Image 1 (cartoon, rainbow, N blue to C red):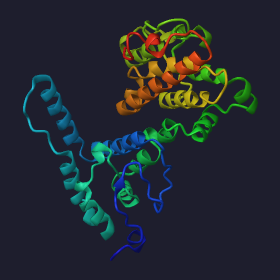
Image 2: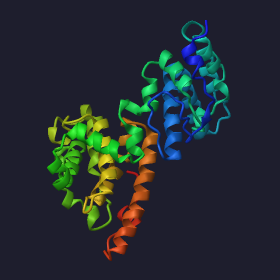
Image 3: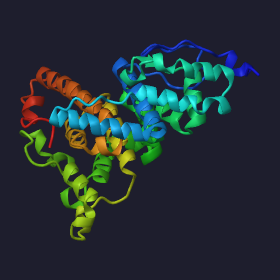
Image 4: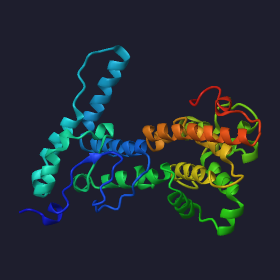
Amino acid sequence: MTNKKFAMNIENEHPAGRHNASRRRSTPAVKSKELQALRVQTWYRHVLERAVGREVGRYADIAARRDTFGTEERLPGLNTALQKWLNSLTQHNLSEEQVEAVQRLGRRHYDLGETTPTEITLTVFETLLPGSAAVYDLGPGELPVWRVLDGDMTACQEFVQEMLNPTKERWEDDFAGLVQEVMDSLIAPAYRVKLDDIPILTGPQRDVHPVWLTHINNRYAVTFAEDEADKLPEAFTLDDSILLAIALANLATEKDGSPQLQLEWLLVGLCWGVIAEQIDEHVQEYVLRSVQKRGKVIDAALKRMGLKMPTFEERWPAGLAP
């Protein structure tokens, strides 16, 4: 029997970046077309890994051999594998309308981020893979990743308020203290620095980044001596702290005298593989591009003020990788 609830809400797939006003899901839109494409791709990779993980692994192995040894092995069709998986389940779990939507899946381009999934598509996968809709609606880890990355100042402030619970006075008078608190949550005691002592403020940054050192020590803790000073205290989860750093970097752009260069330094360190491992490598690439763009804006502002400071390229002469 036809499910009338879904029959009333069948939609055509639409290009990424365009949001159908009739969608009933309370998914916040994002302004950036690049971010919307990343959002779709991240959701689709999540679906693929959970539904046809074995084929995803085989694809990665073959792709690695092709890149390394120049083999001509044929890559498995992940979209086809997913369609086959869906067809084996849909008759018993979905309404007629949902089944029809599933049968059209192979013609979409979610892997390229070119098509935004509709409400009915997201509902299909949420039915079969509970939790998958949250990756699209919020972001990996069910954190407000997409809104924060999009520079939604309300979302950024709400997330900082939820995690750090600062008073109104602290928001107004101790923003740098909030940054220091988050920075300390990402750097082990042995490597911590005060905001005013970050070397990037006076010259090029060439040393190994303390965020990276902390990450390596935590990742390989079992092989190192038991030195607690090298390890990260568990004030927040690492995902929370990373998103707090990004949120504060966004908020800093609207606060006079805020530590924007210090936040740049912190985010670059996080882009040395920490975000890739904790959240997603493609999210890391997006953050890094955002840091570069913001660095150019900071450079222009400093120049207008007549301040002689290293440019973004001069601050990072060795590039943006460890």
